[in-house]
Length: 407
Image 1 (spheres, rainbow, N blue to C red):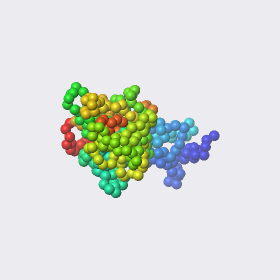
Image 2 (image 1 turned 90 degrees about the horizontal axis):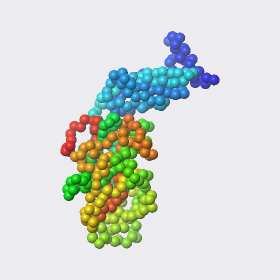
Image 3 (image 1 turned 30 degrees about the vertical axis):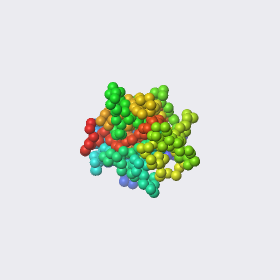
Image 4 (image 1 turned 120 degrees about the vertical axis):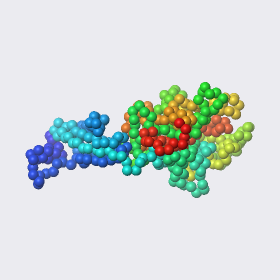
């Protein structure tokens, strides 16, 4: 039996087909306008008010060719190129099929987009020797203050390093537009402070402190990084030595601990910050002679902090055999602070690398948020914990106005 809503739609459609005059019942409103005007690289959310058995959207580019289709009821329109796009929407229903067409005019933005970071949403570092220094904590600073300092450090071309601390510490940032996923191309780039050591130029090693990249697409349109996250699977994602869903908890320093230094005098407090992980292992982040400030974030009153993510295998090797000289070798590709900045391709990222939490590949039309976290849990003698640092990110599809770094 035809339900009331479908019957109403059918009657309205018949009345319109009969050519009723000025006082006739108007055409049914499906909640979508006939014409839209939006800037490029911005999303348009189309949510039809009508329902049916199934749906089909077809999006035609300015050249008249189909650029995408979806069988979802709701459609998120996103385009990089300017021009007039035609969208056809069909409700596929035996009793009350429905067809609607709208035009979306994609225009150049009024204010030119920046290719660089415009906002930092979260700064949640793990404990480490550069925490409370990069960025600098000042007495009385709140989380909001530190978040603003992190944003001031890495936004635009400020190029001031921030540290993420030990494994799991992270920063979340975004741009003033959606970064478009161009098939087969690198989409964005991130700068760190890695360098290669010179004793063995045949190997890519030195100070690589790899950070894992996560990305998110703002499907709910609220401008906040609260949608699903996807990992960009780098070269070691499928390594048998890589641990997924790894968790670690760091505890604030025990005020009753015995302060013990190491035999070499490089560590002033070897039992400084205790950690325990999901593998049942435990250890400490020691305090060293080079950094005497607090290593646990001072803007929080929390007694512990927990991080979960993919843990890469240790990449540090004590080539001296005595703990005096460590080399942190680079992974092949796909990580932040893993190769020197002048290796453009090795510091660039492709949105098509995205996988879900089961390791299945996913397709994202673009991304709105990026999260970087330290991907290794290791101590390297007097070098301390491995901690990812970064200072800039860039959308590779937006023309850059200035570029101080060497390519």
